[in-house]
Image (cartoon, rainbow, N blue to C red; front, top):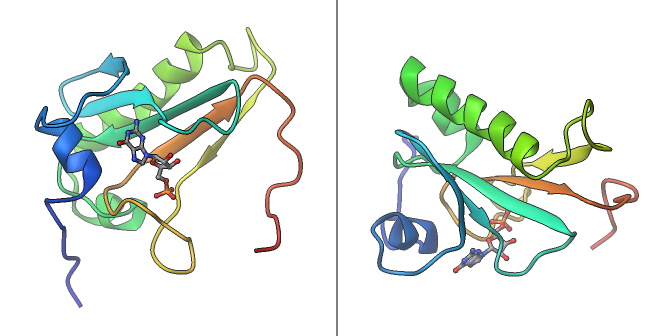
Length: 125
Ligand code: 5GP
């Protein structure tokens, strides 16, 4: 079944400038901004500008340039927020997808979480 992208999702609206965001980094193909409901002292979302629902969708259909830009943007956000292993104390990168992943916003995003010890990865629902 093909991936279907809903261009009314909240991150599509952020990309179109219809909803404000606290931008951390903008590159040619990616945008990073603070999560509206931070779960940790560092909680930044990194999204591609293209219409991709999930990481697997992006990995399958994005161009090499988009993938390179997005990957580098994730690394840059880690540097900018001070969570890299050389300068900081680490982080967690999470990308929820679909029903089992309990994805709220159907536009690919990677959560970069850090700034405190985060505890076990999965909690019971
Ligand atoms: P998901 O559950 O899809 O992995 O995560 C969606 C994330 O988007 C949540 O952490 C939520 O707080 C964040 N979020 C939802 N709406 C907005 C918004 O309008 N602005 C920002 N900056 N974050 C949002």
